[in-house]
Structures are given as C-alpha cells and as structure tokens.
Length: 269
Image 1 (tube, helix red, strand yellow):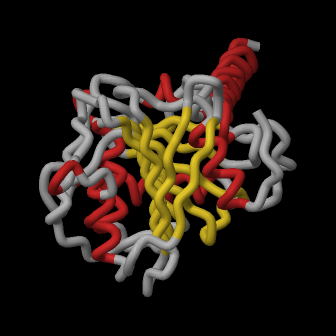
Image 2: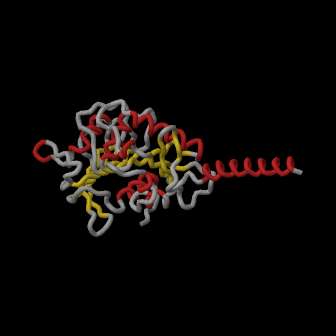
C-alpha cells in the first residue's frame, strides 16, 4: 500500500511539473515575457486571429529606460497592431536601452533571434515584417533596418535617427519616419539652411531616390497635423517623411495609419 501511495504521489508531482511547463509556454504573451537565452521579449496577439493564418509582424523597439511590458499595452502601438491582424513583438533591451551607436550591433542579432523564435510559436507572414521604434528605440530600428539579413516590408520610425552619413548594407522596401521640429530629446536633424527633409537623407541615398515626387498634409487628431514628403521614384524602394511642429512623443494614430496604408486596410480608430 505504501508503494502504491508513493507511486501515485510521484505521478501527481510529474503531472504538476508538466502542467506548469505547459502553462508557462501558453502564458508567453502580454506581460509574461518569452525567454530567449539570457534575454526575453513580449508578444501581443491580434484580437481576431484564427490561430492558423500567418500574421504580418511588427517588431517594436521601446524607448530608453522602458521595456516590452509597456509596448504590449500601449494604445498607440499595440492598440494599432491588435486591431489590424498584426503580431506585435516587443524585445527587451539590456539595461533598458539599445546598442545602436555603431555597426554590427549585438541587438541586431538579438532582434533577428526574436523573429526566428516567434516564428516557432506562431505562423508569420514573412512578406510583411515591419520594424518600428520610438526615441532610442527608433534609432535602434534604423540600425536594425541598416544591417538585418531580412528584407523588411517597411521601417516605421518615430522621433529618432542614425547619423545621416551612415553607410547601410541593408534597407527596407519602404521607409516611413515621423519627427517633430520642436523635439529637443532626439533633436530634429535639420539640414543645411533649415532643410526639413534631411531626417531621411540616409535612406534617400541608400534607396536611390531622386527628387521629391509628392507632398501632402493630413491629420490624425485635432492636435496631430503632419506635412508629408514622399520620394516615390527610388530605384530600390520608397521613402516618406512626416513632419509636425511639436516635440518628442508618439503621435496618436500615426502607427495605425501607416499600417492601414501599407496593408491596404480601410482605416479605423
């Protein structure tokens, strides 16, 4: 009888351990990070995903002293992706920051590893991989777009750039950057004689763009107004720059609008 009791106890313990592992794997979403070696990242699934269809992906780099826990609950970031069928991946920077200052960043390797690991967990539409970031995270998104082995669908960058004289081995199919002329945190990179098109000079050169082909004005809210400049005749892609007069922040509705346009969606709040 004692042996039967011990066997039953051991069996229940093993079941509990197995259940714990299964629960941990299932819980690797939202505020619970997905472990990846000594590092981790966060996941936010789209609202209406059917569990089968490959999803577009947006890899978003957080700002300085933030983590992915903020990104997956941020209304202007995850609020945009989850309503548009886009899988959001939010890697966690070491010491809550990113190494974007020079080429061959270890964080670029980490970002690729995040995408590869996520692909083991979820079906990914590799033709629609977007890379985004805000502030220091925007500069890191530029760095990753500059040296990733992947062909990115688009770079969606907010208030942060690399030096426009950088040389990039890689480039996305499309670049969309937004920046405020009153930004004093990641200063708006004015060009010669106050040229406000300079923030995307690197990408215009890298993608072989000629003269600006289109300008437009639009708003996402009563306070968020943009002047858009487009270079659409580039030999390798397309560049769009949205300029506003305010400071350092993620404009409400900006990421949502870019995803709507890039994915051919009708647009929603």
